[in-house]
Length: 226
Image (tube, rainbow, N blue to C red; front, side):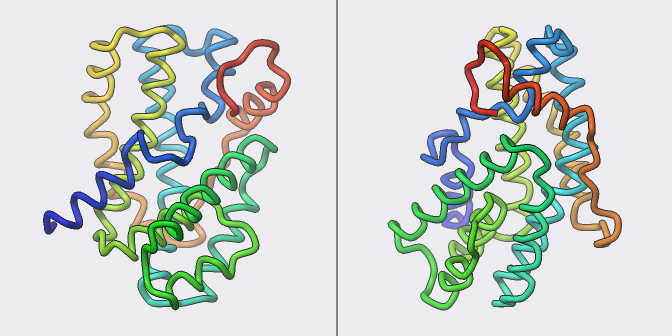
């Protein structure tokens, strides 16, 4: 990858990107509340299971399809996968999370004048913009290779989950970095699986996670928005 594309990828996946990723736990806080996640080992199991059963089988493949759709300027494909991703958010918190972050990233891309007018029009044509759609748009606009953008998204997701555990289990900083380092082979596996799945193989079937997300909506004391 050229240095410029790498720098663009690092910016897109940075925790300092102002889209609010730090404010979401994606159901993890509810798992912390009920004791499912309580130490480094259980935190790793949670992240690995969610990565391989949900993210690698739905969110990452959808991002992969959106990257190709924006690169081909295929308005129908952008609309199709945007709508399918939103429809698959099966709790109020999961839906609000992706719409808020997608809106924020889309607005940021517009403010920074990323992408040409035709490409930007594909993004603005969506009634609601989830995060994968905005991320795919930004990656294509900045000429980030598709495989790098996919791996960057996976790492960013994992890093955010680890940061939640560091702050809320709580884990120490060294423990958090050890956990993140141990996840690298798992992220590579997920990045290899996602592009290989056919459309009819995509699934985010995870009723336990959905129930935790719904429980989090009424959780008495919480730090995160999901």
